[in-house]
Amino acid sequence: MIGEDSEALAYARRAAGQTTMHATAPRALVTALVATGKVDEARQVMQSIVRATPAATVGYVRKMMPFRDPSFQEKYLGALRTAGLPE
Image 1 (cartoon, helix red, strand yellow):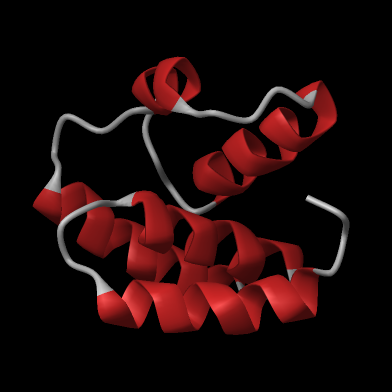
Image 2 (tube, helix red, strand yellow; image 1 turned 180 degrees about the vertical axis):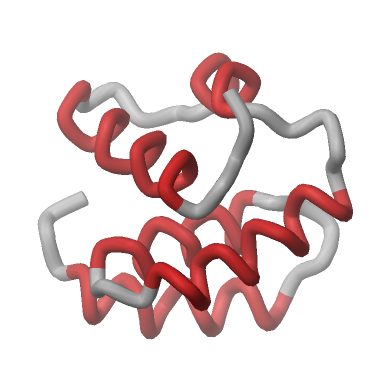
């Protein structure tokens, strides 16, 4: 959220590798990948998310996300869209 995208990517990779129960860590990974220009890898991760939770949509994530900062919300949702999460 503070703009340290490369550092966020390192943490998101670690978190995504530790959990399979929730899509939160993989979505954070997607966001960090898009922010650091790794869009193809972000799309691959998003494909895994959609396979695991086919009902996942941008609308659902918007309702459930805890972020209150509007600019970060748009960055987050924009990254998910870029990676292929359906509306």
